[in-house]
Every structure is written in C-alpha cells, then in structure tokens.
Amino acid sequence: MLSIEGFQSAFKYIQLFKEGLVCTVSLSAFTVILGFVLALVLALMRMADLRPFRFLDNTQGGEGRTGFIGFLSRFRPLNLIASVYIEVFRATPLMVQLFIIYYVLLAGLDLPTFKLFGLIRFERFIPGVIALSLNSAAYLSEIIRSGIQSIDGGQTEAARSLGMTQTQNMRYIVLPQAIKNILPAIANEFVTIIKESAICWTIGVQEIMSAVNSVKAATFTIGEALIIAACIYFCLTFPTSKIIEYFERKMSRGDKR
Amino acid sequence: MATSDKLIQVKNLKKYYNKGTLHALDDVTVDVNKGDVMVVIGPSGSGKSTLLRSLNLLEIPTDGEILFHNIDITKKKFVNKHGKVEKVDINLHRQKMGMVFQHFNLFPHKTILDNMILAPMKVLGVSKTEATEKAMALLKRVGLEDRAGAFPIQLSGGQKQRIAIVRALMMEPEVMLFDEPTSALDPEMVGEVLEVMKELALGGMTMVVVTHEMGFAREVGNRVLFMADGKLVEEGTPEEIFDHPKHPRLQDFLAKVL
Ligand SMILES: Nc1ncnc2c1ncn2[C@@H]1O[C@H](COP(=O)(O)OP(=O)(O)O)[C@@H](O)[C@H]1O
Ligand SMILES: [Mg+2]
Image 1: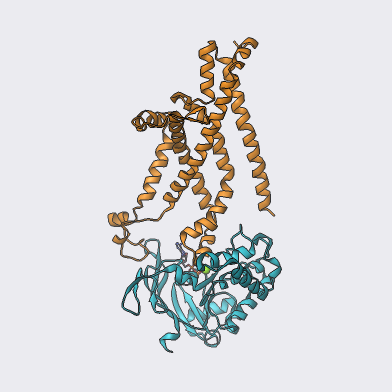
Image 2: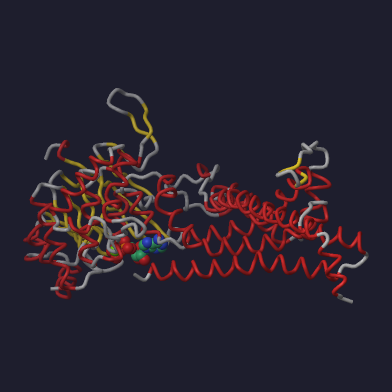
C-alpha cells in the first residue's frame, strides 16, 4: 500500500501541507483565545449570585422560604443559561455543532471573502473558529470554574474585609492565582483543539486534512498523505505537551519553596 | 454613655442556618463603644465567629439590626441627616472595619509590601509612593521591615499574623475585629502577636477580639462577653466575668479553661 514512490509524489504537494499547517495553527490559536474569553464569561455566569426574584423572600439573606416561592426567590437565570450551554455543547458531537453553525446559523450571512495571511479563506475559517471556540469554551469554563473555586475562600473574605469590591477581588486576588493553577489544563485543551481542528476540513477550511484530500484527488492515493499529516500533527502536539509538562514541574516546584 | 460614643450597636441579631433549624446567633443585643477592647469568649460553636463576621457583613444576618455610626448596614438604604434616602455602601463600611482572621488569609501571590498597599491603592486611591511609605512605617512598628519583599510562604505564623494586622491597619479602620488571631499559631509565637494587639489597644483602637487567651482578656480587655448556644449569656468587666461569674454556664466554662 505505502510506497517510496507514493511518498515522493505526495511530497510534491508539500506546499499544501505547509499552508495547511499555518491554517491549523491559526485555527487553534484563534480558538483558544476566543474560547478562553467566552469560557471566562460562562464560568463567572455559573458562579454569579444574581437572583431577580430574591425580593419574594423577605427574610434577610434570602434563604428562609421554602416551596415554590422559595424556589423562585433562589432562581439564578445567569447560572441556568450557562449551565444549559455547557451541558448542550458537551453532550453533542463537535461535527454536528460545526455543521449547524456553518450550514444553518451563518448560512444567511455574507462573510467577507478575503484571504487571511494571503492563503486562508476567511469565510470558511471564521465558522470553523466559532464552532471550535463555542465547543472548547464549554470545557474551558469548567476548568476555569474549578480553578476559581480552588482558591481558598479566606482570600476573598480578606479582600472584601479590606473594602474591595467583588470585581476587584476577582481581578487582583482570585483570577491571577486561579489562572496560574489552571494554565497546564488550559494548555492541554490547546493540544486537544489542535487535534480536533482537523474536523474543519469538512466545511472547506484549508488546514492539514484538506491538504491530504487534495493529494488524494491528484494522485489517487491517500496512505502516504495521511502518514505525513499524522507526522505534522504529532510534531505540533508532542512538543507542546512536553513544554507544558516542563512548566508544570517548574511551577509546582516554585510553590513548595 | 452618649449615643455619639456608640460606634456599633447590635440589636436583636439573629443568624439561622439549615433552613432555620440551627440558631448560630439567637437574639444578640450589644453595643461597642469607641475605645472599647471587647473580648468575646465562649465554647466552640457558640456563635462568636458568626457575631464578629456579621459586624462587617461577611455573614448576612437573618434578622436584626447592626448600626454603624447610627446607620443600619444590614439594610439596602438609609435616610441621611438631610432627610434624603441613600444607598448603604457596604464596601465603605468594611473599609472602616479591619478584620484579622485565624488563618491570616494573606494573599500568597503577592509580596508582603504588595499585600499591604493593594487595598489602599485600589480602594482609597492612595498613590503607590504614599502607600509604600506608610507600609514601611507600619512594618517597622512590628519589626518586620526587612521582610517587605518576601512572600507570605516564607514567613512564620506569628510573622504572618503581624502582617495581617498591619495590612488591615493600612486602611486606617475605626475598629479592628479579631477572630481567634492566635489559635492557629505555635505556642512560642502567640506572645508576639498579642504584644502587637496590646500596643494597638493602648493606642486607643476600638477592638472586638474573639480569643481563648484569658490572660489577654483580663489584662487588655475592658469588657468581656460570654456566649453560649448563640446567645449572649453574660457581659461585664474582666473582674466581674473572671472573678465573680454568675451564670452556671460561665462558671462551667471557666472551670474548664482556667
Ligand atoms: N456556613 C455555615 N453553615 C451552617 N452552619 C454554620 C455555618 N457557619 C457556622 N455555622 C454553625 O453556627 C454555629 C456557630 O458557629 P461559630 O460562630 O463559628 O461558632 P464559634 O466561632 O463560637 O466557634 C455552629 O453550630 C456552627 O456549626
Ligand atoms: Mg470561631
């Protein structure tokens, strides 16, 4: 099946693989940034204590009522929206999400058709970034939430007792520590995104898998191109995880000072 | 005593947990006057922390009032002296009440100096130079000026607690709340922290101190509260409480701890 000649003819298309590599890396990088911002919002929404019907419970602190009125007074809409979002995106296949976004939600929009970096087709790239971001935000937000909740509540009490607002407490005390703790998990999510971004070739994003497809169409063989693609993915993800491990070890050493 | 001397008035304060079945605070009424060093004693679980934490609303009471400068801080709004309705700004009141915790709660990702200057800069808008100057003076007062650049993890428990005290003092509070400040310390470090607290009291600071250090209560306190089961059982001067306890619960408690 695989042959030297096969590799030789596949290597003629190496330019396609290079462009695919640039595309995959951009796809993953944009996704991790957008996904992180969205995940932060989701995490804060899940922890928000906004209770619009709190006034129905006339006891101070609003924990006293039982029954339906009590239920309504403790109803937290932001939390509900974020929870539903997270559960839906974690419980459905990424490919279904990608197709719904590309063929349904963004179908009516006329996205600008220029080429990013002179080679990436913007109108295909953006739906890919959006789908991957929405999907990874669901996972990242749970990572962020656990990171925030791992910070000892005494810190928040100290900050609040010094007169800091909840926002100042988050910004100066909780988030800097939480994000440092979850950096390895975020970086792992980055590796996952690199691998999952392969799915975007199905909507015509010219990333690595789409290069494989082009080689297949031109040479009528696919094995060699797939091996090359696998090697490229491996060269992207393996060093990334090793670098993460290195920093993880270094940071945990710092903590035990 | 005139009303103006009353810094904090606690009226019929109640705090219930577990859907009202657990009465952590059961109808507590007490005043804190300017200059008081009020020591709160009582068995574990009697509601001492809950009372202290209610004073700056780290716990939201179930019922009752807490007047700070005659403003009920448990309510959302109050009527000012011109008859206008204003919002109660709890962050503003918290600035004026320093709090020291059993487990120090220093910010581990910040140096000692940064721990101290963060809130003055972000909350009061003090410049960095001014805040640093003030922090260094306070550090000198507690003999830790050479640790300004250290991180909390590099300090002993006693040093951490002294830092926690001066961090609270940076906000120039009108009252300092201490929740068992020496309970998490090795015995040899208790003295250095109590010493700082004593100096603070001698300087005229209003203090509410939850502690098991009966020696401190007797020597430094001017009033002692004894709590049991969420109730304020007995109140008096240190002599009255320690030498002539009336309530059997207090006599029982003192027999165990003294
Ligand atoms: N967050 C909470 N949830 C439920 N019960 C609590 C909570 N905080 C305190 N309690 C209960 O309230 C009572 C008083 O607690 P606390 O004020 O901490 O007592 P102390 O400081 O005197 O030891 C205890 O029975 C305690 O278990
Ligand atoms: Mg306690």
